[in-house]
Image 1: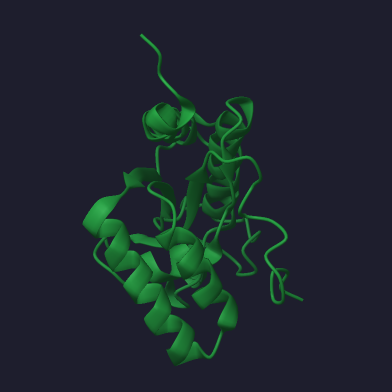
Image 2: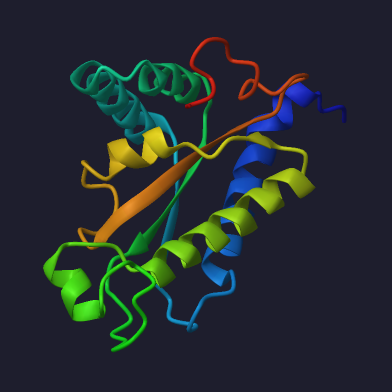
Length: 182
């Protein structure tokens, strides 16, 4: 049997995506509380995210969201990672900029410990992609779109998307004007 790269790359990407989800969920956390939510998206559901991104590009007049939508559209799989918004309930933390969790919740803020846990989870996930030579890019724009859709539970307010690719050159870099947000 001979299997060529074009015949197996989607299977390889999917297998690595599953490992990325596991890495995100098992990543170290500030308190060990399991608030990370992770998923793999493809097919019709991915296409719906692309449509939402294109809509947000026009609504917000942010060309990078449209560019990222095209990037997601041309790849089969993406990993989605978010964090539940429930605060830790500490009386004297104030790392979020508020006096305590009660004030942060009243102001509809985001817990700094949760956001840190999200960053660690994303880092763990993309390290799996890198270890397996799968090109990837963490995209805020995908997270912005899915935060306005019924993709994650309603208590997930901050999330990101990571499209995946196997090709001779990463499609996620050297993307022209607007590739770097200043």
